[in-house]
Image 1 (cartoon, rainbow, N blue to C red):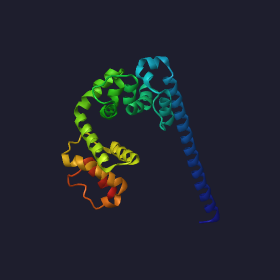
Image 2 (cartoon, one colour; image 1 turned 60 degrees about the horizontal axis):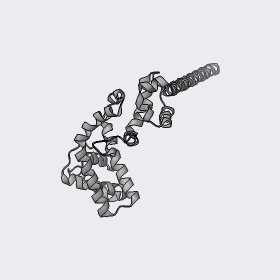
Image 3 (cartoon, rainbow, N blue to C red; image 1 turned 90 degrees about the horizontal axis):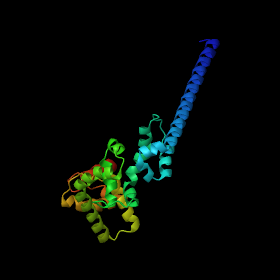
Image 4 (tube, helix red, strand yellow; image 1 turned 120 degrees about the horizontal axis):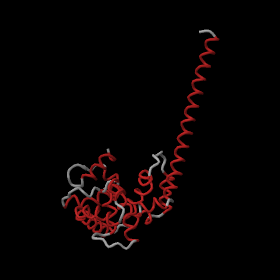
Length: 234
């Protein structure tokens, strides 16, 4: 190939790279503009009195937390009230349902903390149509009617293990944090599985070298815990 041909090819490649870079920059700019427009729309809706009247439970939320959920959202949503509720309200409700019930002095059938567990089983669609606390309780009480025996069994097993092993506050917190993040309250357990749950979690967190040789699939621990160990020890 001649020198002239080499130069033409180089210019062509350079031109294509420049065009590609421009397209990427344009795409990024458009995305940023659209995302900012979505955030402005969402924030304006949260401050809109008619919107808040239509969704009265928003009055019970921490306004700053709702705004933070909007600002932290890294996607572009449709400019709709439904999208605003899904981004701002639903994550807050799922994390703070028990707190809201406590602040409103709502009488409940089950321990307040357990309602944060029950609400995980309620679909977004159901939560979006529930405009009162009583409606939310109607959704969560039947769930707790099924899960409460499992929750209480785990609580008793943990309290017994923590007392017997004299766990430090830090150890208690780490074990409970791991447990809460991974537990499946729907699983039916036999006494042996329940008894082994927290010793195995403690060993995994603080003495992992002793756990590597254990078999996690022999039915002596809950299936959710066995699956986790299989994924992280192999």
